[in-house]
Length: 198
Image 1 (cartoon, rainbow, N blue to C red):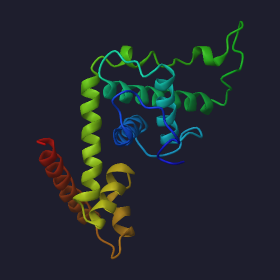
Image 2 (cartoon, rainbow, N blue to C red):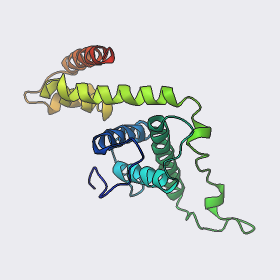
Image 3 (cartoon, helix red, strand yellow):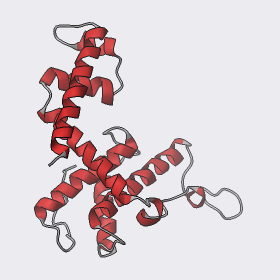
């Protein structure tokens, strides 16, 4: 899947560069819900972002407030919907399976009530996603390759420090991995604090 839709419809005031920035932020919004960059129920992160963008385009990009927080909330709602669909599939039942008197499972799986009604404080959500974006930049820009590898393995993939230490070349102890993660965390915080003032 590519990171960009072919020939996207853009709302007023959003140019191609801003569109790419919004898509990256929407991706982070989805990742925040999914807690990992993976395929869920046959749907990847970029598919959810595309689905959210298409949904907004179908409604003419109408939002009750600023567009950016609205777009992030729509992406988050689509991510929640994908998780709910995956959970329904895990139960080994079809969403179209009849469950009683004329009801189907899809009728009982709660969907998203909508971006505006579910997220009263969209600005807080926007700030969280911007912090995640800065953290992602910091991981790429402020950390050495070894720090990046160790930090991502421990903090994002949940691997044990000892296991990560054994995989490094040369191998190191779990205690040393902990020190590397602590140093990386300090670098990431410093990067974010330095950029937060901009």
